[in-house]
Image (cartoon, rainbow, N blue to C red; front, top):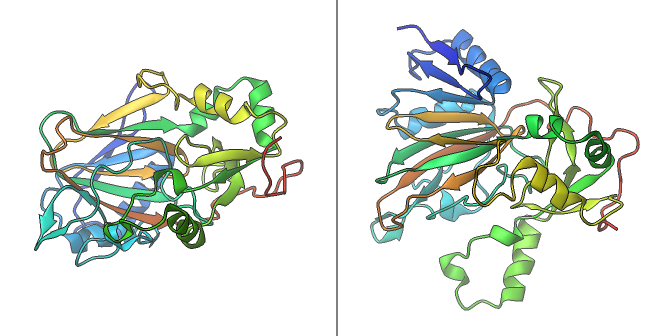
Length: 306
């Protein structure tokens, strides 16, 4: 069966991919998948129930250089390239970290070199709905009033992991100040343009998130960041903003998305005790993260917004 990519209809985001296997895919197939990720933001590989961890890692390598998560508590026990989110244990030790990602973010937004592509598999589905909310930040930027676009273009954004860093078992009883200093040393805040230019598509991306962006540099008013988050839908606690799209998982799916262009937020199962597990690999794709990193007029400092 040949690999077939079927884009969503009526302007919706994403494509469905059928006929794919890691063992049978050709270089041309992978090139088409990469093109679809950049074009459609999300691709969903169907019928991947039998993929092994080794094959999952191999799949990720076709989308760039895999970057393992910097905290080992999230690593797969046999394949550190795989980030594990689960509420399960093996041999008395947790398998990964439970209930991750319940806030708007792009993966590794707080890194000096943010990630390009995310490959995600829901390995154990809990009862009821389990999914991921997405916002296309290219469209979100395109929909901004012109005045907000101009304000955003001349600022830079500072991103930090400190708000959602999960306490590790060994951190119990440690002084909070020591832990904060360690987190900031291991993963210091990173500064990127508020508006990033996609190196493949040339599109402008509003690169801010409710979870990781703590302030804007060069902004002439403190309210600009909140205005951008609100306009993109990230402050809508009802998740009904028209920019928000929900993907609910079906057994055997692997979802691959453009981590530059999208922010996402996990929809967890209602029952936190229900068994659940997901695997993820993340990559840098070999392109510059931002095709226009230092355009004239953007703030160059690292201080706080006015």
